[in-house]
Length: 242
Image 1 (cartoon, rainbow, N blue to C red):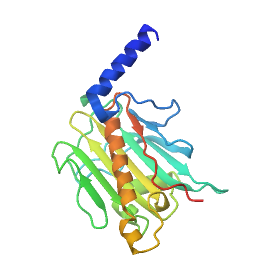
Image 2: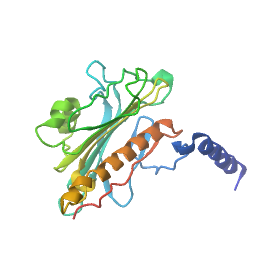
Image 3: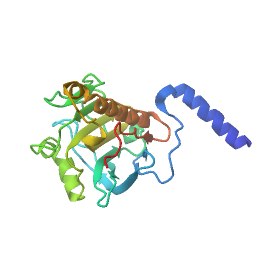
Image 4: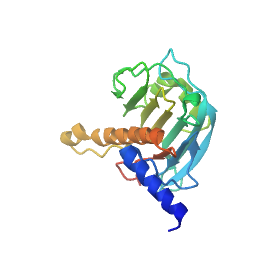
C-alpha cells in the first residue's frame, strides 16, 4: 500500500469512527445515478433503468411552503418476463452541496393522515424536517394525484407509471445546516407485502413494508450526513414476482 492510499484509508477510518453509522466513506459504483450531491447505489442483480431527470420543483412539505427547485433523478426497477413491467419507480431530489449557502429550508409539515403511516422524527420542529410517510394502498381513488399533484403530473409527463397495485413512500430530510434530501417511491405491493393465507398472515402482512420504509428513510439520512452523498438503497423484502 502506498503512502497516499494508506493516508486515504486511515482518514476514512477516522471518518467512519467519527460518524459511526453515518456511512462516511461508502463505495458507490461509478455508473450510479445522481441527484445533486446524492449518489444512489442500486441493489445488485436487478434490472434498473434511468427514467430521466433535471431541475424540478415538486410538491412541498406543506401547503404554505414553496417547493425548492432541485436536481432530480427518476429511475425504475423492471420486472422479469417479456414485457418487463416497472415494479418500482424512485424519485430522488437533493441539493448540490449540502452547505449552508446551498440550503433550501422551509417550516416542517408532517401531518397525520388517515390510511397513511407517518413517522415524524423531527417532532414538528420549526427548524428541520425528518418526515416519513407511507401508504400501502396508494393506487386507488386518484390518491396520488390529489395528495401529490405535482409529482403525479411529473411522472405522467415522463410517461412513467408503476405496475398496480402499488404503495407510495415519501421521505423528506431537511436541516438548517443545509442538508436536503427527498425520496419518493411507487412500489408494487408484491415487493413489500407477503402473500396472505389466513387472518394471522393478514394481521402481520404490513410489517415488512414498514420495516423497508424505515430502512429507506435511514438510507436517505445517511446520504445527507455522508461525505460522498452515497445512498445505499435497501433490498425489497419480497422477491421479484414471476
